[in-house]
Amino acid sequence: MERDAFETLLQRIATVAADYRSADAERLHRPEISYRQALARFDAETPERGVREEEALRELMEKAPGGLAAITGPRFFGWVIGASEPAGVAADWLTSAWAQNTGNAQATPSASAVEEVASRWLLDLLGLPSGCSVGFVTGATMANFTCLAAARNEVLRRVGWNVESDGLFGAPPVHVVLGEEAHSTVFSALRYLGFGADRVVRVPISPEGVMRADAFANAVRNLAGPMIVIAQAGHINSGGFDPIKEIMPLARKKGAWVHIDGAFGLWARAAPDVAHLADGFELADSWGTDGHKWLQTPHDCGYAIVRDADAHRRAMAIAASYLPAGSERHPADYVPELSRRARGFPTWAMIKTLGRDGIAAMVTRHCAQAKRFAERLAEDPSIEILNAVVLNQVAVRLGRDMDGARSDALTLKAIERIQREGECFVGGALWRDRQIIRISVINAQTTDADIDRSADAILRAWRAEREAG
Ligand SMILES: *Cc1c(COP(=O)(O)O)cnc(C)c1O
Image (cartoon, helix red, strand yellow):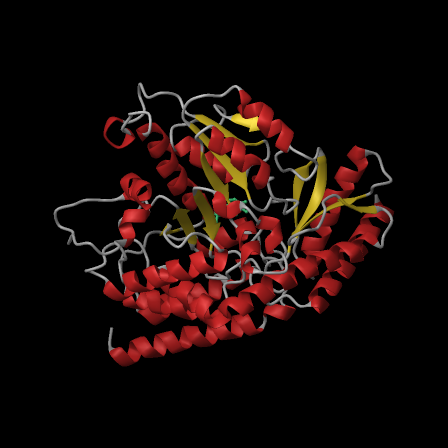
């Protein structure tokens, strides 16, 4: 492609992207078409002959928008998803254009150096020990996987078993201890690692979904041998934190490796006003967290952080004769993949533009907005907020005055109506045996007015369903 034609193409998509984002606040907060309709739009035979770049891109820009989820919209509260902020998006465009396959420091010096610097910034912002290693992975799922691979290999190495060379057959058993409501992706990571999702010790939880300290003590009392404890910073429904200060000394006494799933909750540590919630989590051995949630980088971006950098490297390093060696930090030594995009660039760009004070202010604001959301909804006496709103999550039960089945059915209908009307987007979940609405406030663009507007939309939808049903 000629230089000018390439520039024209990029300018064209820049216009489309900027137009899309400038319409965020007033867009319908849901896809306009269904998956089936999207499939019908794109469905086609394998192209026999290529077309010009402009033509392919034009088709993409015509067909995709109707089926885009309004994830960047300021009233999108579904799941826990960041807003893919402009500086990160722009850095990500360069990341693609520069095509730095970020595995080896000598092969890709700038991408590797930016990762090393961004690693230091991340550890500083999150208040974690400066000697930790950081792997730039796709998200918290792979961060948990990477950290738990290091954990598995290290606790077995300590009893004389080398997983890297001998695998798991015949290895001494490893106890894995975690809360009953650990995130589903932690169980996925355990499956990938050969632990099995069910061969674990599940610790009973409090109403906030976090481990009960007394139950944790009971669970580990009679366990001996290699052990991994997985604690959570930020429960997906309540935003609650496992009682790390009680867990840690007992885990230490047992010689356990303590891993933290802190996909979003670990970021409380970056905001002085709420940092106390995650106090004590710095004492763990490893942490998985996300860039594409609270740091607002584009997808995909997560961080696998390990106190024992050697254990991290032993579990993940890729050695090959065609890769330059040397004593530098090689990005591939800390992640499962060899070839990947330079996630350090968008991470660097987001930290650079927000700064320590910007990150703190955003996290603090989201926590205050979650409280405001809960208070607005609780003005309706038939609505119950099920969690203590300490972080950015709100678990809402509609129909507290109704029997369970009716309240569940009407809640589902209300969610459908809220999504259909598109003023805001919320998801549902089953929690404490009830159908709830789950609200995550984590988009950098969300204003207090967006919270009020969304609360009004939810209250309206709830009254409509209540009267209808
Ligand atoms: C989102 C989330 C994950 C998974 O993270 P991905 O970035 O989607 O891979 C794991 N744990 C918790 C608590 C989460 O919120």
